[in-house]
Length: 302
Image (cartoon, rainbow, N blue to C red):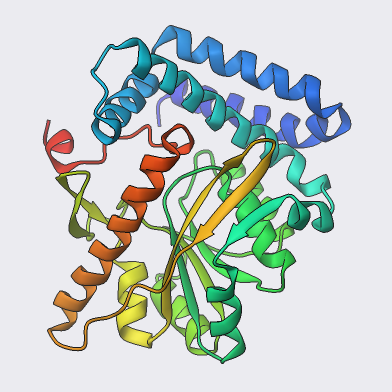
């Protein structure tokens, strides 16, 4: 790691540490306004992340690159992204009752009914809204769960994020650098009737499953569909978004595993089913899709 990168990482880690310590002590509305201001500053500079967000949003909405409509959508997207961090800093101090009360959920019965029947659940979701808040809601209604987290830099920030999520009631497995048995651990959890939550529209492992997504090819993680195929767990796509000053979660019906075909064919079919639901959810709430990386194969090839 270069000295410049090391210094930058330490600054980011210190900023997060200060956020978790100070933001909960301050009034919510003024701090929210500060995060909106910071989002607008980043958006106005139109750096690499903002340009990538606009490119991704142009693909999913059909808006012309450089259009006023696309620029306004990307501004709303940056405000949504910064709202996520503002809420992350406040979540540990929020009462569970408030989190549950302010979360507007459709399809919760798909989780409750399967768990009540002793069947494991795999909740698969795109990077939208506040997924940590959604996790806090899930724990709050009686379903502690296991998830996998990308290993952030520096290590101190990753450890702090893990402690934050564990404090909300999650079991967190590192994507890399762990014991190398993540899939086995997840399979054990759902075979015992537990719940697993996994991000599922961006492959970080280089071993993803190719799907059609908004008319072009991309790869999604194999984990969620493979868990369904291997264990018989219910694979449920979930769309997470901001609902005014509250939160929304749409939990969709189970993506069925085909009765016929090879394991690879079954995994591919479930993966495509997830992608189709994600398309609909992102189209309905594009400003809450926080995708600032290259996603489609033709973009990665460049």
